[in-house]
Image (tube, rainbow over all chains, first blue to last red; front, side, top):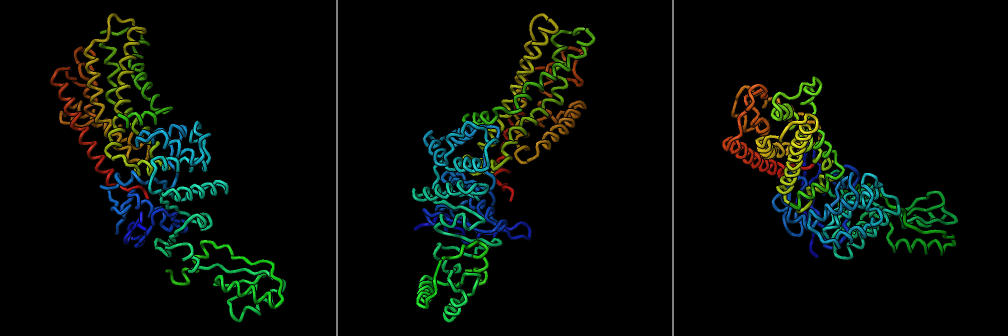
Amino acid sequence: MSNVIETAHLTKRYGSRTVVDDLSLRVPHGCVYGFLGPNGSGKSTTMKMLLSLIRPTHGDVLIMGQPMTRTSRRRLLAHVGSLIEAPPGYGHLTGRENMRIMQRLLDLPQRQIDWAVDTVRLRSQMGKRVRNFSLGMKQRLGIALALARQPQLLILDEPTNGLDPAGIEEIRELLRNLAASGVTVMVSSHLLGEIDKTATTLGILSEGRLLFQGTRSQLMAASRPDVIIETSDPRFAQSMLRQSLDCRTDGRATRIAQADDAATARAVSTLVHAGVDVFEVRRDDQTLEDVFIDLTKAGGL
Amino acid sequence: MRYVNIEFIKLQRSLAWAVVILLPVIAVASGSMSSLAADSGLDDGWHTLWIRSIGFYGMALLPVGIAILASLIWRTEHRNGNWNALMSTSVPTSTTVLSKTAAVAVLSALMQIVLVLTVVGFGKILFDLPGMLPPQYLMSSVLVIIACVPVAALQSGLSTFFRSFAAPVAIALVATGISTTALLVDISAVIAVPYATATYATQLGTSLVEASNTSFDAAGISVGTAGLVAAVSSAATAVIVIVTTWILNRSDTRA
């Protein structure tokens, strides 16, 4: 599988401040790449370098195998749709007028405009001026403007910002569908939960450095959330499991750290055979902060 | 041409149209105010009306008006994520620079046309002047339209890099003050500066009437002066467009 985005030692410094530090990104073709990191970790700066909106201090960017530079960018950008920071849109114009500007600018056929508008489900709002759009609608128009050129690569910076849960789910579904049709999607977020289930590949950024890059299962192996078992007798359960597992009591629940599937099955079996009633077995929700703590504890990857 | 059309889609419901109409109307109205108030009429008919209208307009309002138009055209690009979107398409940087310049130049040309129509309207309706506006002023208006192009390119270039609306307008105001002064004290080299070229073009032909010419010794319209305006304008426009494209290709968006 070839990489649609590859960077080598990508670095951006402003004065003595290093914003992006020696990144080697690998974004495989046809994936949804979740680019995670807290606010200020360098996600937007990285994405801007991928688009040549800003030039790196060091290192190179390869887009579809070709170096992205100020001389090559216009040619490469024909195949790249993007939404960086605030969504674009001329506030004094309607959604339809905004789409017409993009259509004329890139000389696109009407069906591509219709497809982009339908994909983000904005058809019924196109007569409204963009300044009267909700933030969610502006985000969707921004995505439609990026999609209109039918890009092979879509780079979206926090596209779920300001969206309600239904809107977030809609974007997730949209990204999955685009990836299924062969578009490579790179999407950033500061919330793991937002793109966790959509992304097939993850890159985690902290203070400009890549803490982790790989598939979701690789991440799980590196940073496994606790298994929580709720039982009729937590104290007895803990004494049973303590011998073989790293566990502690947390109210009604027993938390087992670093348990893989086999260990989880063993724990349940042990408890059931000892006559303890098991009410619930689940994995704890994993936040980006948990992952960070785990990855930092392990010294990164 | 397609790209210039796009600029005019963006100009829908823009304040730019108010500027295009109001600025020349104000220039003509204020120029003929004294005559109207004193009920003294115009000493030399169309010539006096034209000179009073174009005088202050050419020496201050026109360059500032072009500056406002350029700032208005660029203002929306500096908002929301529009700048990033504009810089992330396959459209060459030079095309963006040229189409913005063209849009500002077209609006400036319309401003000159509104000025001519307003002068004719005032002359025929308010002052009941016989005949028509002398054709030499139509000729000089064509030259004004040409001389506005480098100013449009320069102001569009300034508004590309200044996110502030007022800064490029202030620069135009100060630069016009300096260039007009230089023209008054007869430093002829200043004519290469776009603001001076535009002012020079507006004053062409206004010295025919001894008594009421504008403050400096304006040249007449001849093949020589027309050629000078056209040559200086095209050279300056080319240089400004090339430099703007060069800088824009080498600048980064804000972090």
